Image (cartoon, rainbow, N blue to C red; front, side, top):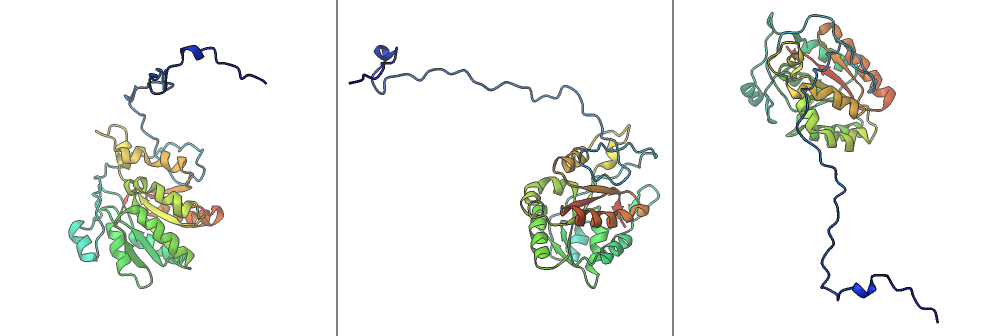
Length: 260
């Protein structure tokens, strides 16, 4: 009969329940959460950066005037509530704007049937114009993440939806975007307001992290994107629709200025 080998420390084995747990060295490495230096401002874009691995090119034109930080609004059930919460932004010499009419003309060219999202100061005028549109239906959501789920369902049902939100809401909605439109391969175009863009200009008194986090997040999530600074860039919306169809990925147009 073979005898099982006896562990060398069998004589020192204690009775069940009496053994004290051995102290084990932690394998975790301590690290500091305090940044060692201030982050460098992200160079501002001209337009069209479809490759997530491509660094944004430096903008050579003079820095834009600093924009007021938009105020995020909760969803409302009527245009009256939106107008009361966020008066329309009017064009002025010191505040660059993008024509809502030109954006809507681009949406018409691509047969958009629904626009979903959460209004903010930057997109308020565009939402107001869309409410008066004959063929485009506006659907407000309580959170930006809901817009992606609803838009994905509308697309599967044969509609042509578009998401209109701000970059703060885009950051909040990441998992909803991942789990619906991205994983489902839906060529969904997003118009995303670039809150804080002007705070990245040299000499700005503060930097809005909603802006500095924005493009690195788009790249990390593999979202093709381009930028619209003025009405002259309205063709970038058409380019975004073409890119979305080519890649079967959600594609973003960054609205650097407010709509009017």
